[in-house]
Length: 359
Image 1 (spheres, one colour):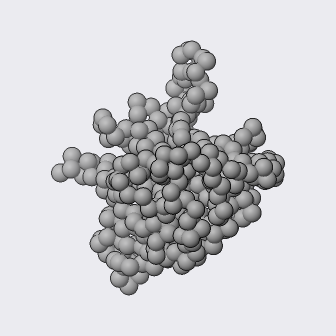
Image 2 (image 1 turned 90 degrees about the vertical axis):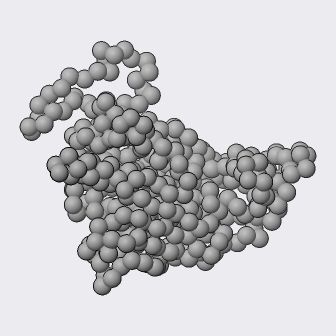
């Protein structure tokens, strides 16, 4: 499906090596003046060519077009359509892959599923596709911020063996790593550069905090908050696992260690350490929602690799095009994007249910 979720519904379209990408947002209230600077800023955070550890491809993603439906600078209840044109697509860079299946990519599985062998096709599975998601997030962010006071902070938590030791939201945008601990940012950069110099890549972890989320968000029983967030995060290319709260670190402890007593604080119920990550009984609490994702090492590396071709012959291949030695900084706004769209959708669903019950 290229369409995401229920009331705050958006459909993405376009390819990395096509003329443009875009998104159609099928729900947004009328009479709201869109914060165009906010949208531009989020696109700049995601776009390629922003630092020495990302791809050299240059795209003016912040020069988006609003195709419909804004009148007099305000939304009109009709679908909002945004377009971002591609300028530096270089399909010829991939001509040596015409008859090859790259390892750890979707070349082979796509060919088997659809019977089509377009060696440029992964533009739809490329990270470039996420530009559409970030536009949907930027629009949602305005409403979440202005109407509900919700804040979101995704940041790099770990690169290989290098972990952060503190969390400072204000420092996230101060380094090219987008980590919440500026004291380890340079060490992370240097390690990435060292691995890249050997034509290799590494794992990393991103953590996301959602603050001031309303209590009670979920839809029974197949649309639990944790399952929605997990599905959205795992839809991001390169993300291989998802955890929330204390996560997998609790596998060695018993229930009496993991469980937390309730306590009253500021007129609300809180727990000692929020092991549940702001989700209990699959439903949001008052506490911060905290989750993490792990992103696999970049599959496109300059090292020579073994694979098979379309004639089922064993061959060697080596890439010669632009790629991200580290997609980490550019994934951070995409994680926020998917989380924001999920939370807004749940809020709208809850409001719709409350209005129905009230009538």
